[in-house]
Structure formats: structure tokens, C-alpha cells
Image 1 (tube, rainbow, N blue to C red):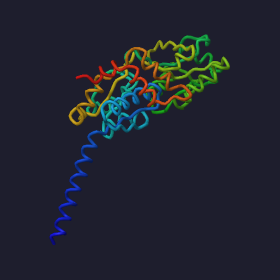
Image 2: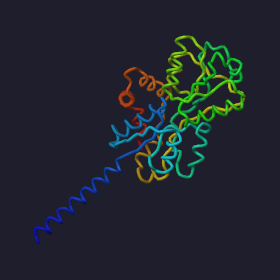
Image 3: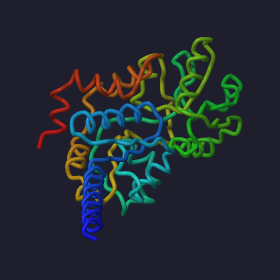
Image 4: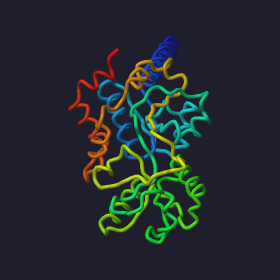
Length: 285
């Protein structure tokens, strides 16, 4: 009986130790959501690298649709994301979960969305698209169907009466590949676009004027977190609140990622190594 009692005590101690370690480990885990847009990938992996390399957390990042990104944060399935385009592009998503999430900070100002064409295309306004629909093969090259930009572009088709143009669903990668192919052949192409984005550094592009202001004015990219993050993980919350890209830095990291051998996490670690004062500013109390 004594041996059995000792074994039970030992087993209980082991279980308590496992529970304690597991609880501590869970407290050092962060879950982030993101959409595979160039800007979102660069921002998410930089946040991941800082949390892991500088703060000792383990980060799981989930690639999802824009709608799922907002819903997962609102439900608490993830801790947050750094990809909210406001006040216009993601307004409907925010409205759906506004009592369940918090805007923790702004990571980039003066962002923009709209329809983009190469500079050699001779039109300057969305209102001219129908007249030249054949030159564009009757298509606007879009991105993933859940993106707020796609919903806005559907409204553009309706408000401008673009009955000769179709919006094509795709992805950020398909959009940039389509631009590359068309520009190589000097063909006309129109695509959903946003800045900051590395494509503006690679090719001479321009936004088409939007006289009806469907896409809205200047946007900001913001960090969204679940309501209880500040209480549950105060150090993570404090970092996310301070995280903000310096001027031109986001464009630079996106450019690194777009190279043939680009790796988002390695690019993030490179940025951390080359910009210690910036990173320290995010981590200071």
C-alpha cells in the first residue's frame, strides 16, 4: 500500500508539473491572423519575429480570408492582426465585431486603394473604362473574393455603369503576375491596387481617378486585437500598441519578400538586425 501511495503522490506531482508548464507555455503563445497580401505578410512576419526573437513568445500565424481574420479576432480564436484598412475598406468587417475587438494602434498612414493601370495607358479616370473595355479584354484583375477592396470594386462597377467590364477574382500573386505579363507586352490592363505595395517600385503605375469617391480617401493600416488581450498578455499588447512602420520601411521589406529567394521571416529578422533602435522603441516601456 505504501508503494502504491508513493506512486500516486509521484504521479500527482508529475501531472501538476505538466499542468504548470503547459499553462506557462500557453501564456507565451500568440496567435495572429493575416491575409496573404504583400503588406500584410511583411507586417505579420515582422511582428512574429519581434515576439519570438526579442520577447520569447511562440507565434502561430494563420493565413485566412479578410472576413475570417476579423471574425477570428472577434471570437477570440486569435489574438489579433496588423492588417486593418480603415476607415473605408474594412468598415463593414469592423462594424460586425466592433464590441468584441479593440483598435490597438496604427502601423501605417496615408495608405490608398483603387484601380491601377500602367502609366502608358492613356485614360485617367474610372469613368473611361467602359469606352475602352475591349483594350482591357473586358476585365478588371482582382484579388481574393473576401477582400473589402473587391466589395468596393463591385460597387464601382454598379455606380459607374461599367456593364462591359467584369471583375475577376484571384489573389495578390495573380494580380501582380498579370501586371508583369501585360507590362512586358505593353498591353492595357487594369487591376485592383493598393499602396504601400512593392509593385509601385517595380513598374510605372498610376491610380485611375475616382470622381464618385467609391474607394474613399486616404486610409490607415491599423492593429486589431481581441478585447481581453491587454489583461491576458499585457507585454504583447504593449508591443502591438507601439508597433508602427517608419517611412518607406514597409515598402523596403515588401521588396525583399518579392525577390525570387525572398522569405518573409528571414526578411523580418534582417530588418530587426539592421534597425535595432526602431525595434527598441517598440519594446520600451
